[in-house]
Image (cartoon, rainbow, N blue to C red; front, side, top):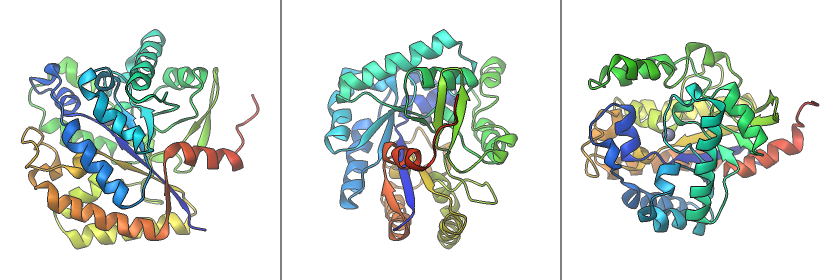
Length: 316
Ligand SMILES: [Zn+2]
């Protein structure tokens, strides 16, 4: 039997990227969901893949998105909660604010798609003990907000260096964007958080075993900007290390992995957004060819069920 790889896509929207980057105009909520969602669904259908889409409450609550979001669940995909306001400083929220953030998003997603989410990923990998406690209390089946890499602070420096419009206060909120150096010491394998609200299964975003450097598709595309051969070698090495160390994969996708400069010119502060989408899509397809050859690709909820069958939560 092939080892497991869960696949998830954080459905970040144009406005949420502009907001985090401190760009004007985010507050009228510009959206590319009607472009990218059909494109991703087509890509997945051609490969017989069912994955998890983490939806942002603000988008789910907008009736203009109802049809496009429903097309996700109609195609059989899982939907998860990616917060309401998509603020990577979610770890600074109070318990009451977190409760409200989760509840509003659950309701908006259920209204838009007919399905109540049972999995959560924080924006920008943001999480806190308070958040984990509230997730456990609300009966979430899993959280997947940890990103065990040493490179988070470098990604943050790169990102914020191009964010000219941010005030010192706004910069302070983004102090933990993409995580701390010490996150690199976090486990790659699933585990249970012990919270006052009960145990909560954590499925970390997989980084390269031993080296703890990112291997998600956006990072592979960034490498491919320097050398396609290097990106492919890097990907093969990562998959081989996951297999040899018995690390079940949980691979993260983003809308920008399927988009390019011909879709929008407002996001060219992202490394791979200066290229047209067709070439990127072809390359992503090649990464998937390799992945699907060696791994059984499933949505996160199914991954959580398989983990729970062998990894019992600790006694309270
Ligand atoms: Zn996000």
